[in-house]
Length: 408
Image 1: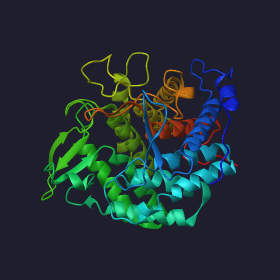
Image 2 (image 1 turned 60 degrees about the vertical axis):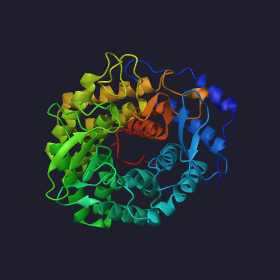
Image 3 (image 1 turned 90 degrees about the horizontal axis):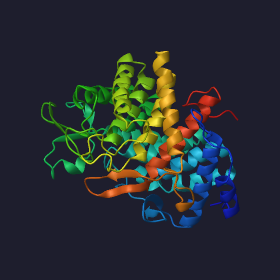
Image 4 (image 1 turned 45 degrees about the vertical axis):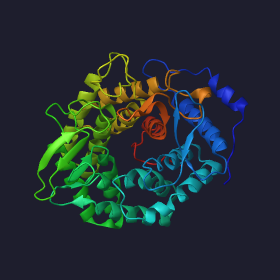
């Protein structure tokens, strides 16, 4: 694998750059350059090991690497980060790195569905790779993955089963988690690229069923919806990674905002736009005053001493940039664009950027607080949605749709 390793002098030059974020303005080229510097540090740290960077705990300074395994749901984010970096730099060395780590995932593409995370694993990696290279092999891999994901759809329930392995241990006949909304994008893409309308119908029905049963009246969501497999009725909503069944887990709400924004883009159905507004407005109204990174759960008992979750903010920032372009209400469009910009400015501050302390982009994310796992850590999916949001912001500045490719 070819790559350019940036020297310490370049990093120091970047950190001493006099360009600063000012009120309402994001120095997006500077932040994308920062991401590139951190990526080169990570590539140097990984060396020739065929493993994926997963997290760095707050007290540590090096990535914990994980093997390529179907049960490791985050393995697609690192290749996806590299593809976004290549999209911005157009350097061959950055393309080589993205190709190398994407191709490492190929064994995962030949297995039956382990759970719903195929979208995270395959669409973030191979999907971005196909978008930027037109590699027909990558296209077929994404189409195959969409077909595999569709095998988890239960027509009696109307959703995709998220965790098959949990059905017996927890006596959950059919479980669907909010994260699954993101994986619908791969089904929609496949339906438009030769996979057939069946995949579109599965994705849309999943979104409709989730909207009907997995949210409270105020727009807050249950992390997990449990359904009966005999007649498909909704049994209960519970949490897995939030504080309690009745609380608002920040990243779960972020998945909902991102997911329903994407579903509206794919369907053009205004019910999904109105619902995206509802779940977004709740999130924005619950943010700490004059802050744009939420506590890991909006109802956690020890606020303001609870940890923040930068990953939720990065996901929402990316989603709101798209939602602002899809809006049919100009006031709301400007509100969402402004909120996304402020989120990115806050994430790009010395409070949240890793800078010289670690090779990641961001600090202070929370993975699984109830399990005391990845609490106050740098996590690969936080970095993925951060660079995605920066790329989207730059496209908006250039007058493009956030889902367009940069003009060459």
